[in-house]
Image (cartoon, rainbow, N blue to C red; front, side, top):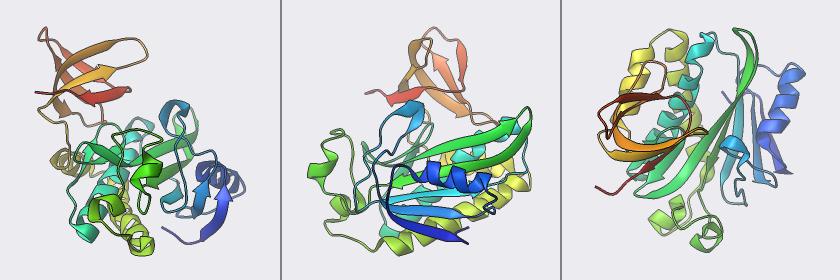
Length: 245
């Protein structure tokens, strides 16, 4: 991962730049990074504030895994970012399903996976990663009160290059596990870093909203909820909001 790596001062979206390059034959492992994005986005087309001071990067992948396992790429990316933050700065980063990394009750990073696929064949995937590194709380407050940055947590700015290198190394190791079919190892590590396991949550999907206890994540990355009426619900996509005990 990271060979080649293209750096831009400003782009609308690193995902979009790399999708164009993937269509033109960019090899697996290629990474696009930008100092700032003007049109960064998260899941469901939500905007993603991407000023100078963060890590805004996307990697192109050509995974040799079944398409029903593709969400596990996002799981591997979440693990990589949480582990990198923990190892580089000794901050207790945890994962909130489906694709966010939190420190305490504030979001510090997120991922966006996009595919070019046909039937059961994945042509390529692009995994976008956004990490709030050296961004002030004042800038972050434009987005939400529950957003933080590494510099805000530490009280000083940090060098972003070692963090990006660590994220790519951590991700590559887990991506190779996926390609080797070691799915259970990824699920096990993800659960060990989860902020919501055995916690009460509210789930919002496109069709419904409900509350219950997050009791597991299955072998395909779906969240398993025990609803208040005792029924078990398998959630493939949606927003997960941790509730007060």
